[in-house]
Length: 141
Image (cartoon, rainbow, N blue to C red):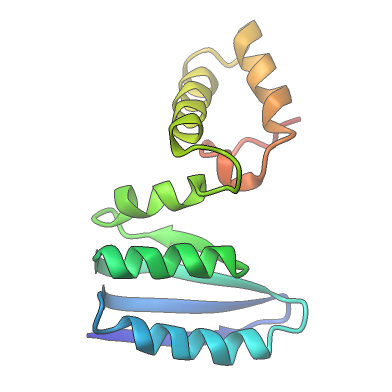
């Protein structure tokens, strides 16, 4: 079972998902996405996965498709976070291996040695990357 709540806000539209995102529930999500996308009008769409307790392969592919269609993946439940985090690595033209390697290096440098030269280099590179590649939440000054 999957429940979907849609919250219209001035600058965003948030879709809050609760339950299991599986092959049986994907059509419901795609139906809601079609309705929400038609009324975005320049607003940002956010998928809140905080109460999703299970994501199968079909659900994962659907989330990747939604992410590619303009939706931003928000908070994810700790049980599904590992399977959803990799979706942020699905940037066109960049391998998932490179994306994972960058994330690990960047997180290690930002948390362990904030003032190191390597961290300064990471922050400069981070400024050129999309926000999905900044797992530590740095502002890339």
